[in-house]
Amino acid sequence: MTLQQEELEYRLAHEQLDCVITNRSSMFSEAQKIYQIKENLVFIAPVSCQTIADLKNYPLIVNHVESCPYRRVLLNWWQTHHTTKPILIEMDTVEAFMRTVFVGGGISLLPQKLIENQENLHCFVAEDLPETNISMWIPQNKLPFNYHLLKSIVEKELSV
Image (cartoon, rainbow, N blue to C red; front, side, top):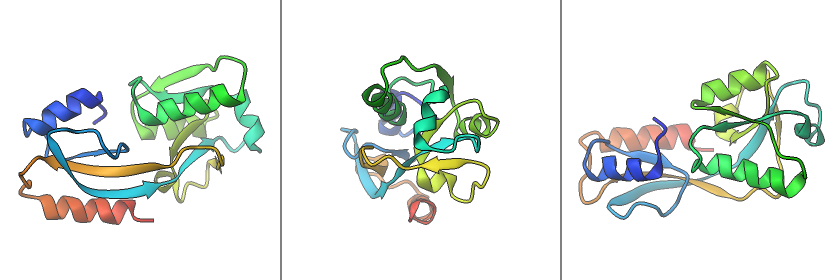
């Protein structure tokens, strides 16, 4: 589920969520961080995009939530490297991002771990992208009944 950060914190604090996974290492005042791992971000582009310089020829596919950290990183990178205003396509799910990129509809920025084994996309690394972390948060002073299962799944899926 993709929500504004304030809504996630509220739901976690009121135990409407068992955990929150985010890429901010310090954000929740009424929660405890139980897991953190570094992640690498990569540009994903259609196979017709041959070089990182070609990225400028495509719309940017971003999350509809303006506070999305990946959206901010992508827009900041664009503003640093281009003088033109980007065309934005707003979506909500990673699957929609990848499908739109696959059909040539644009480019996006995602964690490298999410796009492993995707032979139908080109990936590019930009040296000037900021380092990010994935953190797992649970309610303050309360372990969800399925805590160990949640943590083991996250560790398995996010380990590099």
